[in-house]
Length: 163
Image (cartoon, rainbow, N blue to C red; front, side, top):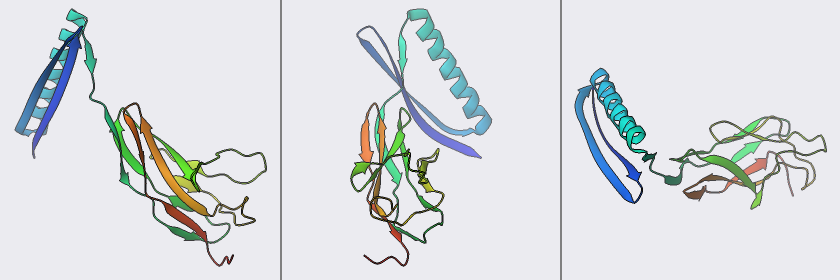
């Protein structure tokens, strides 16, 4: 198996920003890893010897998997999927009907939880009165230091419910 990958790394020292572009092409996995390790060791030696600070390129969040509408029976589990990329690592929050989703309530109602990859999981969907129902329009919000991204809306409908 052969790999081809281009990478850009930069570091700064006071007011100087130095950029190096490394193009790794047609190397086996073992050789690519050895080469990347050599590059990183070289950068670390420069950083530690000169007092420079190594920077990772920051990229704003980008939603790579938007949630979809779901229809679920009361008492059943449901998941609204959301995944986002970005650097530094993104955090995911959810909106319900345009408002930040409350993740804890003292009324004994089972609240959804945000899974590690960002999806919203409901262990047991409730469908009571409007304020106690999980029914609504949801969107995920991905944030990091470089910005934020908001997903498309997805509706969670209660099966068999008529308004």
